[in-house]
Amino acid sequence: MAAPDAKPRVSGRGKRATPDLLKKLRHLRVAVFHPKDADGEMLTGQLQRIGCHALTFWPPLEVLPDTVDVVFCAVRPELAARNYAWARAELPPAIVAVIDYENPTILDAVLELGAQAVLTTPLRSSGVLSSLVMALAVNDEMKEGRKRVARLEKKLLAANQISEAKLILMRTRQVSDTEAYRLIREQAMSKRVGTEEIASAIIQADAVLNYRERD
Image 1 (cartoon, helix red, strand yellow):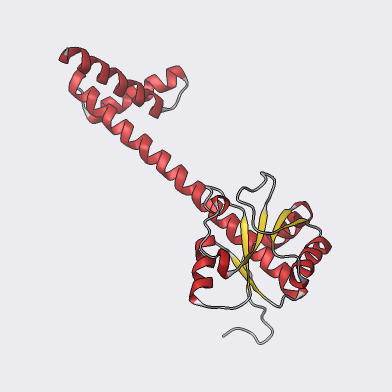
Image 2 (cartoon, rainbow, N blue to C red):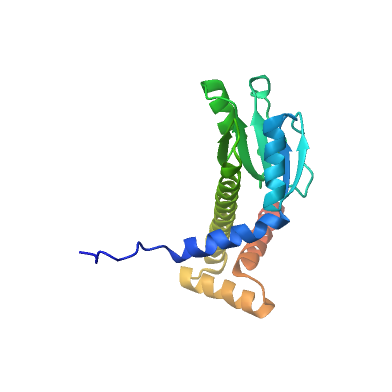
């Protein structure tokens, strides 16, 4: 049983993540897609007080400037069906949806937008920083996840190429699986390239030879 004065454990990752995110705030460029009303002025003003470089637009831009890191976007019924290219980009900005009320149409639009955090109006200054940090954290996690997937796909492709190249060598040189891989690795070491590059060259050479034989 834990001692009465024991403090809850906090992961090392959590300790590092929040200060790192807070340090980024003064360098962030934020696009605020919101009508120029009291909520829009409060939101832009609070972001500027936090230290962000915030610019307001309405209606939402179809194309974002390359420098935008975060988007605060008002989700309105008349624009709920719009699909924005910047929200569907391979590496989209962090997105915070700003909603007036909750109904199926608005919530579907929030999901379609890919928002990582939500603010509800009337806005209060106390919720802006929290939503900004949350959206940045989730967006960073998504980007890291996509990078991991890309690396795994690259490794899988390389493994498939090496397997195919080994089969070619086993067929053409009458060697074992182990010997075929040894040949590939030796070529890679001698040329100072990756084994997947040697495997790709073997596959291409085999395809050329098979094409000539068919002719």
